[in-house]
Image (tube, rainbow, N blue to C red):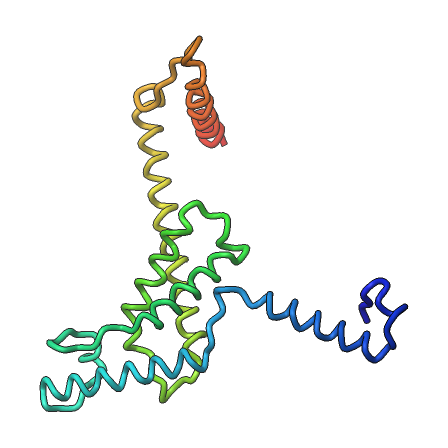
Length: 204
C-alpha cells in the first residue's frame, strides 16, 4: 500500500486510506487520455448511422439495401457523423504512438491513411455480427499503417537507386561557405552524411 508522507501522523488510518484511494482514482482518471473511445457509444453511433442509410436507400429506390449497395452513393445518402470521424482519428492517433509505429517520420500520413480506410470500410462493419467496432477499426487502421510503411520504404529504395545511378554530385549541392553564409554548411554536412551512408551500404 502506498502512503502519503506525513498524512498518517495527523489522521486516523481509515481516513488516510480513503485519501489514498481518492488519489489513486484521480491518477487513473488522468491516464484516460484524449484518445479514449467509448466502445458502447461507438457501437450505438454506427448502428444509428446504418439505420439512417437503410432508410435513405429505401426511400430512394423503394427496395431493401444490400451489402454492395452500402458502398455506393445516391441522392440523400446520410453523411458519416462527425462523432464517428472523431473516433477514427482518436484510434489512429493512439495506435500511432505504439512502439512499432511512433518513430516513423511519416506518422501523419499513416494516420490519414488509417482514417481514409475506416471511412472506406465503415459499411462492412455489421453490428449484428460484432459488438466491438473498436477492435474492428483498430485492425483496419493497423493494416493501413503497414501499407503506408511498405509504400514509403519502396519510395526510399527508388530514391536511393536514383542517387546511385545518377551520381551524388549531380543531385547534391556540395559547396561549402564562409563568412555570413557559413550557416549553410549544415546542409553540406547533412548531404555528405547521406552520401557516406549510401556508399557504406553499397560496399556491403
